Length: 139
Image (cartoon, rainbow, N blue to C red; front, side, top):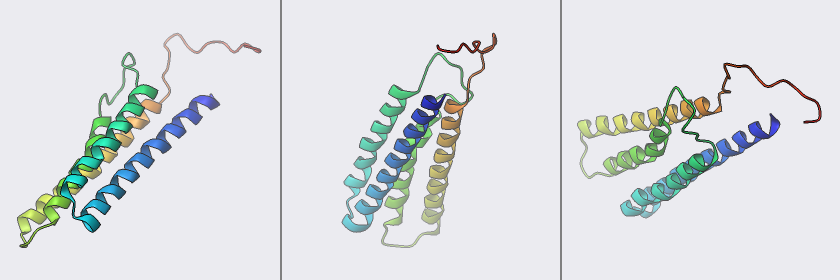
């Protein structure tokens, strides 16, 4: 059991690190560089790596889950942030544009919330209808 939980914790740490690096890169690109193309293309690299790590490490298509494919909302969350940052860089003030920007921010929050629920769904122990295997010492 220890190796399974250690692997899941390492995976969650890596996934969180990739999200953090993505947001750092987006913030640096828009605030310091004013590079919109850089801001929109950097999440593709990190979120593709995150999706591949999840796909190769723990996603099992044959198991039934309560929230299938909700991890993609977490992969899309940085793009909601990029859209919000793009709308915030404007010359004139518009109340409607501020409302749309906050809507995109809440969409990013929702994406991360669903991503966290999906990771909980993946980590939830599965129950076998026949019961667990009997404990046998030495095996």
